[in-house]
Image 1 (cartoon, rainbow, N blue to C red):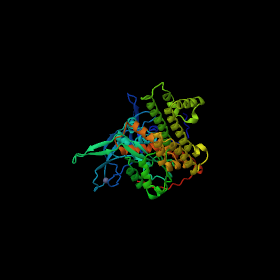
Image 2: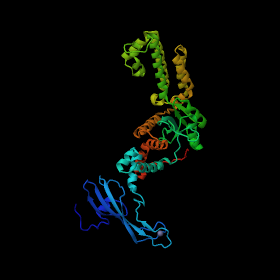
Image 3: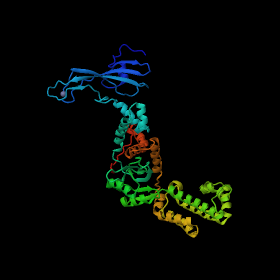
Image 4: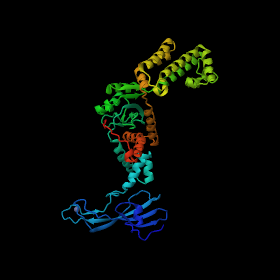
Length: 468
Ligand SMILES: [Zn+2]
């Protein structure tokens, strides 16, 4: 490198610039036998007594500390930080002596703030576990976790924006934990098995909240903690076919439209076809199906959507089911499933235009009518009853197109966090980790958008309301 003679002399020496801690000057650096880099540095900022604020230059003693620091140029450094212990000149000050310090290494701290920052960012931003981040940084798990918690709470304590479409789903968080009460001798639950999760389905907030337990009261309790404005802003709620969430939503959000997730509706119909087919085989042979039985051979074909079957497969199904009275029962269930799928095909994303409620109810009627005509198949009656009970919610789902897809995908993230942590003992830590994981994508997008020039950045005004 050529250095021109007219360049001004650097304010700091090269080693100090490379270390990059404000108020610390590198005095010596050498390579140790094991390849690590030993760096000796001293504090250069003048210190004042923290008790009375009087500056002092009277040295009591010189101490060498060993704070842990980030890797520099891809290698671990052993930092020896020389600090002076000064005597306070104030006569009335109760504090006799104090040591010099810099913001990166506050008094009594043995880890630099930038190392904690790095560990916290890795856990919050990159999804590394606290154990992994702690191992990499050479610090303890509690230190890494506290750094993460400080970062995460900064984000999670922000008041959530209004949510138009809310998703609710349950998530099995892990094994329950109990403690024996010493006085009564009874077992008290410390951590439950379930979490109910609340999702922002289209606003990009991920998971605005979680609550332990999975009863209607638990769900209603969380919703009750939200402000009235926040609850009023919810237009539609997507749930699976479970009655717990239904009753909680009806109680706490009486104005909101409820949509059941259509995946679960189809899943129920597919299961019904399988149930009828298995019963038919059992009635015919007096045993369960096995390879070689005609009805058994088409079991996977029956699970496929009719429009995805080749003409040969279609003919195989018809030929097999038509051959026996038992097979014909399975055919009735198969047709019922397709009739139910015809209802779902009215969705705007499939049909290309928003259906009217009457169309949807018409096709639902056609499905129920088919089941009623074949009430000798008991499984069809059960299916029709279940669907009829959820008629309004199915109609809402088809007309509005609100689905629980976001909930299910974030639920997968929640499960992944639990697996990476090998399970959580502390449900509060689990909730924090899961919620920060669910907003990771959104935070990345927000961070990217803030880097755009001001003229092209869209101004977004968010009304904030805080539930719970
Ligand atoms: Zn003092």
